[in-house]
Amino acid sequence: AQSVTQLDSHVSVSEGTPVLLRCNYSSSYSPSLFWYVQHPNKGLQLLLKYTSAATLVKGINGFEAEFKKSETSFHLTKPSAHMSDAAEYFCVVSTELYNNNDMRFGAGTRLTVKP
Amino acid sequence: NAGVTQTPKFQVLKTGQSMTLQCAQDMNHNSMYWYRQDPGMGLRLIYYSASEGTTDKGEVPNGYNVSRLNKREFSLRLESAAPSQTSVYFCASSIFTGYSDYGYTFGSGTRLTVV
Image: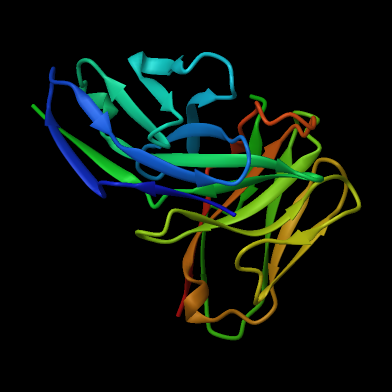
């Protein structure tokens, strides 16, 4: 079985300050890990993905995440928040099982960016 | 633009009414999925279709049926809508290659209210 826990339901930062969104995962197999972003009333967009290559993954819009197997974590960071980063972020764990990708979503973290 | 198209975008139903949510993708993806999104719960898988001609239940299939009409189209049917089915529904598609390094492409969602 696999699951993902996003440790904060809501994070608030000031524009220009660092962003940290925390994610811990549990998986019986070697997982792939993803971060998706959802802007209000929009679908989900892939930010970045980890698939057993480099442990530090760079994504779009200046985001990056580090896979730490010993801590079972995949935290999302950005050095300097922009107003347009305000959105909901989902951490996802995935394992190939037989004929399908079994993807499990975290509950989401809402990021607020203050001017 | 290439992607996943969902119709309708909004729908209000009365309890007991039926409806079909439509989804089509033009990326030649093998696999297609239906999720529902509820506040604080992330996305939960309703049904998926690993390939044309096959469908399988996900985490929350009760009250729903699906049809994989062809490789492009995957519809979700509510036979007798209930207020508990008020949610935002997302269709997604992916390439299944046996190696989990691909994410999903999501549609923009259908906001369904059952009164």
